[in-house]
Image (cartoon, rainbow, N blue to C red):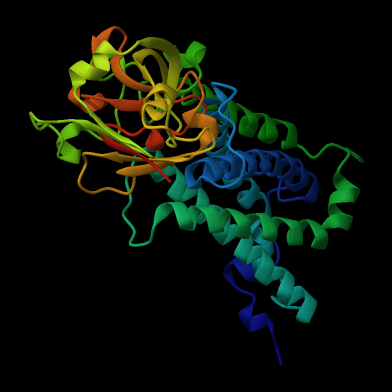
Length: 370
């Protein structure tokens, strides 16, 4: 059979004349992309564990989640130019001839397709999550989680299949390909620019350069941004008979005046959200451990926190004993010396160290033992 008929367009010989479609450039970009993916995966797993309440949950360091989730979003955004450059370098291999040279070659190409598809969808959904836009019918968190594992598995398979090529071109050998140095420098500069103009939403000293971050950390009611407003949550008007109910072996119902009459503590803690932004503030209120002691809750008891919010994925949250008994964990009544604004959870909200912002429950109604 004459195959020349099919060798047209991108399948013809010499269709991709650039010398930069070569293994050394691909290996260098692969190292950078792989490093970003490992950081993104590791920090994403930490975030998932904290949100799901799985495993031992430490309440320290205080800024732990701020750092890990900041790195997660920073490395995820850095992957965008890296992934684009890597795909540009290797995409001519999609049109190599013959398209399939055997069963093993077909499986290798299938694995690459799975890896690329998982990475593209992972980066795309993660990017839209930073601006809280979800134009798809599937749940973001679960899909993002399993895509990460799919990408990690695909990467391992790809490394195994390409190990000889990677080893051969890991170090610079032979003459320099014209334009390679400039190309790699441009990619590195693009990554640096993306990082510089977005990392300020979580790295305070880069705040002045935060041109494209999803949030300006110091913009919002009382100088703090919010993801979910009181209007969105349906908690603009708090019932006049609001009481905080604390349930354990005993039960108490406390008014706002009762809470204000209890010993007050102040802690400087960050709100750190999954979208990558964070900001620290001074929170004042009652230690959660003191409230739990009022009803005789055991030291090792986990706590369920329920909001006045009527619906929403995080209208309830669960807090492990390691958080509930931490002296920095507060039922906050004030922020930066002022009573909480409605958008920040008036009359009372949870604030705890090393805890995702979505679990810092606002408009608290009930605390009860699990």
